[in-house]
Length: 156
Image (spheres, helix red, strand yellow):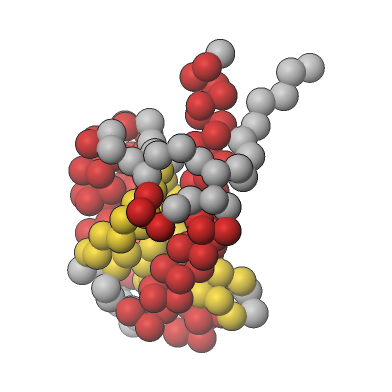
């Protein structure tokens, strides 16, 4: 059996971090986690771009634009959607997830999903460097692995 998988060696190309300004307290921690993971895995500071968007719902449009440019090997989308008393949460969280997936598939560029969808600020902070780890870190590592996996698959 021939096994094909990615790895965590320094990836070629640039990486875009797209980060929501909404829920900034949480998102700044996700950015720090993603940036740290990239640097620890050999990505140079000048290979990383940070793009700010108003909120999580705006992530897919910008991810789509960046992916279409073919200027980046991967994208890490970062945001936090915290449930409130209305259905707004469902639309924003679902729209962000679906839009990011569509941009990734349409342009064949890995997009790490570092968008927290939680019930409370406490849960968000737990997942942004607290007791549940840092999902920004996880999303960045996913992108590194996917970049390598795609290169191997495309090489035959």
